[in-house]
View 1 (cartoon, rainbow, N blue to C red):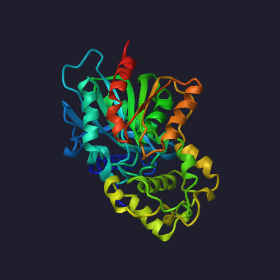
View 2: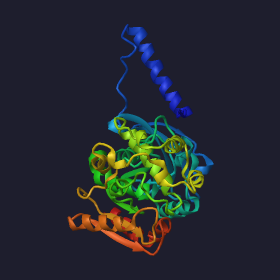
View 3: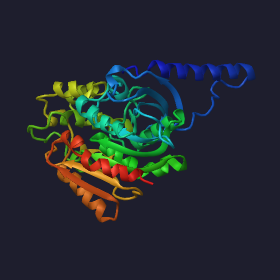
Length: 387
């Protein structure tokens, strides 16, 4: 087991414990009678952002710790990187882009606000473009990354809570930030952006003014893809990151559904790799997994889990309705990290239901579509914040 406690979190926990114990001694109350946790989105502390997570073009940066939720709406600490644009603060404050990042891994050192982006040049160029346009950027790490606990990978509702709570905490901590915000995400973060778009108004309440979403590299209908995984998957050549994604998803299922014997699906080799996944960052982990066949990880098909499709759908199935603001979907047609036809299908199905989906496609791969989408997403977001 890794030790996930960062220094700020240890200080917070120690302070809470000391307060509870002192109160108990003074009043004779049981030590277990502790105050309720702070409401989600409450700022806890601020520290310097590590150099690895710096963003060229930002006039100021910070690592913000705040309260949020994890599996089962349980209270949990969370962290985020905050980037401020250059220039004079406009009337009403800087509008906010909530950056929902792609897969970085599961270990604390992989957190965006600790180790920085996995795709350094791509993300610096992309976020730099938003900063240059006068948006502040709040990049949530997601529950369990860089803070106590473990990260329930691809749990969409948890990610949506984390993103919304990061925006609320940043707005509370920094008066120069507006309450007007939009969410922008890629890959894992594309799914998180879509979930955030579905629940932003509900989770944010009247305090925040949510405007819309941009999602690229969309991981759509993965519940159907993962249902086919098992010992009979042929040893075919896959994208560099796909085996790592599979192990991260299995760990996410284990986190979100401890009642299911996810580990029991695996061979001894699979169990060893799953243990490794819990602390591994995506790029070195993908390198380690070269030549490992997905079928060799499984002793039983994933479909043998009770209500397997329902479990997967509730965990990662992108909602097809309930969007109250526009959603921009940018999809690379050469994307091999997600299933491109499934992303296009989701956009078509959701739009056919009358949802405000705007689809744009690009002759790019998974990573290339991020910056290629800017000429279209820039005016889209500008329109969201107009008025």
